[in-house]
Image (cartoon, rainbow over all chains, first blue to last red; front, side):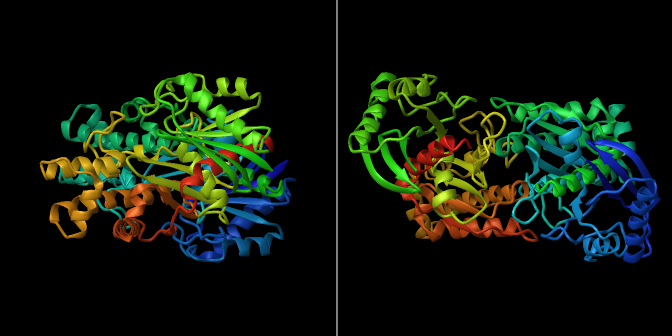
Length: 298
Length: 298
């Protein structure tokens, strides 16, 4: 079954016609920053362009950053796309496209793609973890995503791992994200060096063996490993799939995450840490897969 | 459908004929401490007694404390029942009874009973948490228990919530159980008062307002609340069902757990904390329900 997947990002919209996890054709446009109507126009335009090329589907999937409302009809917090917040995204798209539209958050979408067609494709269960500016995730079992009773399931970056600890963007201190995400490493680096520093420079300095930089990286890897270990004790997936920018710095960082997870899982099974495989296409592949699932009544 | 559930405890075996969560008849005997063969004899004896009274089923469920092997055929750690450890429990029972036997750990069994027939009976998802000498749990979704890839899912007492922290029985420091279970409170009380003290006396002193006792209880409630909050961020159940001896000390303790969970869930949905309803019958009801599920091919 061919379905259309839309990946709404802060700077780009990618739309693709997808069949069994394979991208057949795609369209990319800039994300408008001029308000909700223009975002809807741009999304509809990509779907219409694919239709003009001969690709249409009876349902359309869309992945978006930010938490969604409980019914998955709106994005309720959207710092990077002007006008999207609390706007009736699904309703507007369904009216314009005349077809059912399925909205999911970006971590669930990318994770679903990896679970069905990417790094975890042969597995029954997996947990997708995005290690990036922030830390997000998704839990997958069979052909299902575990959404939870309020759509909060998989918000693994918000697990509390330290009493007190640094304050997170959600008003909670000591969360995995506040302890270990890219933005938290940059915060610690800027403090420790008394100068603005991004993770790129931090990792370069850590590689050279600078003690402060190394300490920051090791601390983040430690808490990431504890977070993964806790997920084993709660959900026990067959594998973790790791995506996001922090995985691209390579073995240097991931080997430390692996070591920390193994330490905190001594005596327990240690699921393999697999790298995400689908790259920039994960969003459209996952969104299209959710559309297919909706059509199949799942 | 009538099925037989066996609840193998450290001191007693309870066996019951159960239909749709209702106990129709039951048999109780002491748990032999004279070795594996005698445990099997006792279990078989209870099932035969129920059969003699006219109750039989095509599959038998059994709940047991302790971690099970991955295939759920053996108990792999059993400090309280002599000879049970690593013995072929399911194979021996199936040979003697001539019927399929389904083995589950006691937290999954009690939680499954509460999920289907007790405190969470009308809900799609729930997490069962036993607050007792130790802390265990089970995750339930639809009519399924989430067992995980290696049967580890639901081992929520082993989540790490503190770097360093007190050492747990599983060789990991700073786990929820080592921070907040009954045995950990007794440990802290015995240290703080320089005298052996059980949780019963600790709670009595805390109620009188003794500062050391109150501090220990509040600390345990705090980490229990953090653990529940983390479970919302991972699994987001419709409700928690709390069982185990610590729930019986009443509002005094539970109101503090509730307050801590609410604090760490500010900005997130707070699932209700429900008290387990099935009491001493949860084990046989859950075991019988797993037998019924096996017969129905679930």
